[in-house]
Length: 238
Image (cartoon, rainbow, N blue to C red; front, side, top):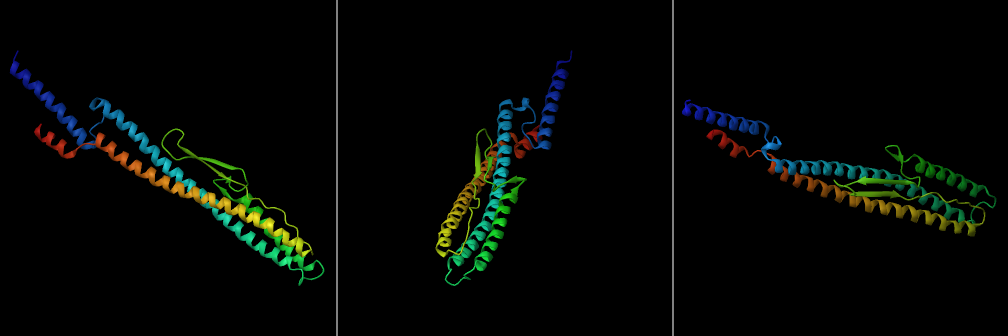
């Protein structure tokens, strides 16, 4: 046997294998292409990739939640406008000193309030987000805003239903109805305030998720990606 020739062939095989690995790393951009390249590094990298993808999806979920809240809040803004007009009408109906002594004037006011109530109720029944009713008093949703188990947020929207208002020729009694309207206004204000606070929180959640995902992506890249300068140096040495 020619020992020198055998050694030369063995060295050529090693060099060829190293060149193949270096070429693969340079072409793929990854230092780790299979478990054999770095088993521990691959496991860590895959775990980080799962977290990054989960965080990106969680950020999208939080943004969906913000859109939902904005939809509900916009509808509640219209309910506020309806209630403010209703209150104005109740104040007008309470001034019986100058109203028609018959029920004619009050009837006209009641007619407008009835129409306002219809629109108020329509807002409750028709305000939806992805076919889910938001303002019927039963909305209860869950947002997954983190990458892992139980990193969620429960979103509820309380009822802002209309309370009956009946106006007559009795100005003092009509004035008492202002309390009913004020209570409805207060209820809508409370729900809007809560939604505003929830939106603010979710906006911070989006920022945190995005920042965490970006930093984790950078860390994963350092583990898995090829150091091009270093790999080119090794390639040229082969």
